[in-house]
Length: 256
Image (cartoon, rainbow, N blue to C red; front, top):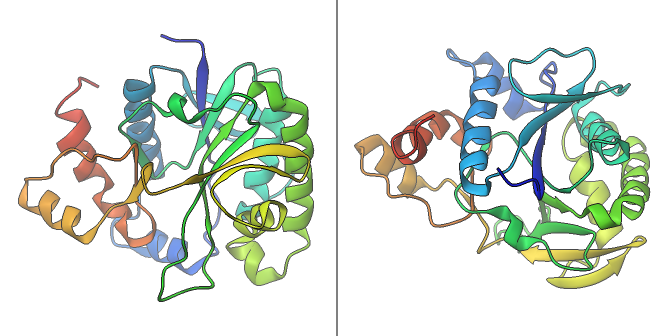
């Protein structure tokens, strides 16, 4: 197994605050985050051939490989920044690292999006026409270069401070993206110097796909082709399809 990269996924159980999280928690069959982590981890280990760890708090016990840090925030948006910052400060950050959200499956080696001389890689998109004010940043996949450790730490310290000062509605949902947006704007593809570091703002279209309605129909019909993007995202109401997609495209092809 290669020692050249690690994948980390922040996770700690929280009381649901955002409406879509409350809906998931209240469902007849609540979304199983531990199962999602296991599916994501297996897909990432197969595609990237590298270690995969959850990053979490020292007081959280999870039945998956974890790296644990002392944290104090107990609001999801702020805690995400705090635990990522703890990892960046730690001795565990000893190689280039990709940060992933847990509700995603990986189909290609993510190492190829690291760029020499770039501290941070992050995905961007054009806001949907029906919601031009939506976030242009997709922060569920990030590339952290070991060579940029000090600059990444300073950057995420700024991001946490910005997020903590945002209004309550954004601390419930969106503060982590808003803080990155403020530090990285103007948002346009390419390599840029922003907020003390070098960042690659990466067009998300070749990299990440949100599970589509067509794919949902295919998986229901038992004829889902293997996704062609590097990462398939099960955001919001698409999460219940994650197990079926994993079974059809990963578990059936590679022994667990």
